[in-house]
Length: 562
Image (tube, rainbow, N blue to C red; front, side, top):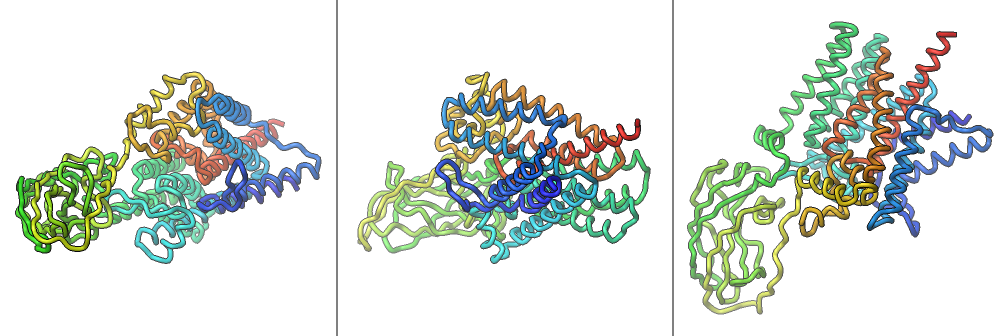
């Protein structure tokens, strides 16, 4: 009975993990509870109730158990000693403890091969739904965009390119989730090949193609690398074990199909920009040569000849889906206040390639009040961004403008211009993690506190508190110090040993779970996912699957010896 209840909880979490809404369903004085956290709590309480009713203790003795307890304990100590934001650190420790509980639930529920296959299949099924939503989001299907607001506030983009995330909070989280279920699905496809079930193999192939396409639409480079690594490793292992056969050929066919989808998903320029630069900071740069002094009259639009040089990496195309125009802002002379931010747009007569210079007759409409102003030249990608707000944007060209005539419509209101975007790269974040560790080497600053404190270690003004260190290992080091890192290394060592053990068999499902663990470890070098419920739940399920498989293999070996 207890294992049945635990298995039901595992199946429920495997199905619902990626569908966490932003609005909590319950607010407590110390914690807000999301729908996914509520499902997690109910699953654990039902299992605990079954244990109490049957008067049985849970099975917990696995290679990962003690190291997991040590890690959660070390992070609890770090939270208790955090120099700031202890409440946030304790919340993160609670998430780690919840992940540990999911691990135990999985070990106790997945007690046979049929349950493992069912849990993997449910995870992949949910992944297909996520993939479908991501594709519809990418194609801007309005009803889907409205529905996705339940899960996150807006669509994410890099430059003019949409990064689809489906119901996950960020595209990188969506990619990490999909990479794991992609590995699961690959095992299910090869298992279907092994039993000569062509229909099931074809079904899993189509599911994997959809998930792979969605990973490409997240535009997450680590996701592409990880997916390629999974396909490559599984293909090599299969080839070494069985030679060229149906499973090997189907894996190779899937890799080729996903590569074709990737190459056709975006323009060649978009793919090149994304794959050859960490962020868009160098994409949007311009040098404008304009008259130093201009004279205008109120109510009289005027054309001004300027030249603009594309000093960035994006082609300026005024006829594209996300058109780029020359524009301007009106500011108080000698000051930083804006009296009219949205200037008229002037299209470029032809696309302007990076490094090229073009002449433009810019249409300018003067302020409605006479006076002396600063005419600040700028470029805009419509509905996306102004070039001047990008980090490290060069200084804008300014023309001193004298406006004469009769004023209309009352005085102009001066306001502050938009701030430049703060978008620190990974190297900046990694250095900040190193500085935090150097300042707090023993216990760190508390789990999940990096995002709240890194600004003071980088000199960034207005640092985004949602930004993590972009490296799971550095995140642990900064948050837990040497104590947390030592416990985490122990956990990693046991996890790697478990994954290697379950790879020794020929069961494709076992290999798939090991590949999923490898996907987590690889992608974690450039992103951090431990604080997000959908991913920490799936991480815990993956470790639980591996521990359950390893325990089953040990029992089978003991029975064989007897």
